[in-house]
Image (cartoon, rainbow, N blue to C red):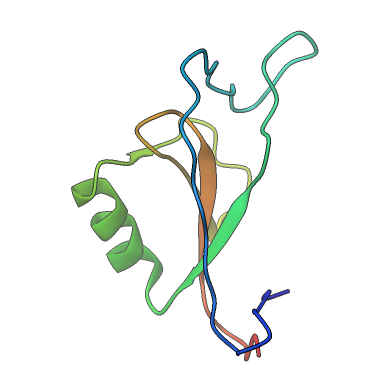
Length: 89
């Protein structure tokens, strides 16, 4: 699902928290859980991974799907990249 504002635009807002505890991927029963998760469609999966790595992300050690890459942002938040193979509008 793609969320859009009434004017059709798309936005994300981020805030910092001084006592933030990074989530663990994959999380166990007593681990910090994800607070939200982003799935990002890319035209080419390997090119998307390269771009994410160059932008400061790391590739998660645990990769549960062949056609999706779990990445971690610099604060440890997981997000997924997947090859866009269908119209998401």
